[in-house]
Length: 242
Image (tube, rainbow, N blue to C red; front, side, top):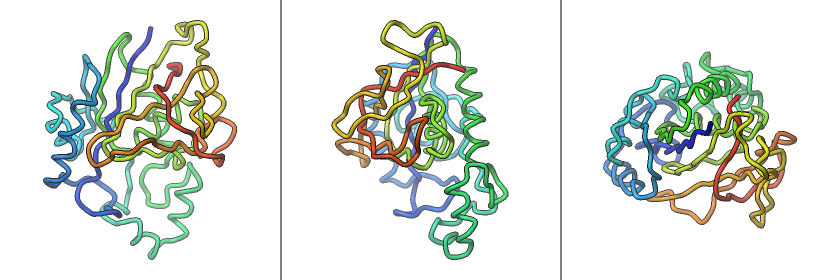
């Protein structure tokens, strides 16, 4: 049994290059950008979204009748909610450093990166068989899903680049469902020239709207290392449902 899952990463909303942590409504530019992504979405039979305001507005902009799913909620920033990264760096530099380097750290009193990865992995395992799912959520949840699908360590979380309004499709297979030439989990990163990850697995990101780019970097997305050269993006991510 397989599941084809497409993530649409919501835009952070208003706030410029250093938006505050937490939810906020989309401004007019954000709404236009979200609407421009509609054509990049593949067919889907089930649409889900995080319960945030911005994800609700993103779903509306792309015309998706998406059901709120609590498991897709953004990471809990605790007492850092409403603050920018620059503000936190000035007021709690050691806490910010710990959060960015230790997946188990939660200096803000909220959710750790490791906790988010566990929560997202559990949700991935609960998806219905043979479904085509659209999930509209925030970048941290998409990163956590890629950590699981790539069988990468949680410390690779911050090395996965998930731009706003990027469209990322993954194919999830039960352990016995992978066909010949499709081993369950990739163990090596792609080369800078664009070679596929080991096991015919690669990371596919389609860009639209203000996030337009030629490619997205996936830095250190391997089970062996979280600090290697950036990997080029290819057509899709393939992994097992565990």
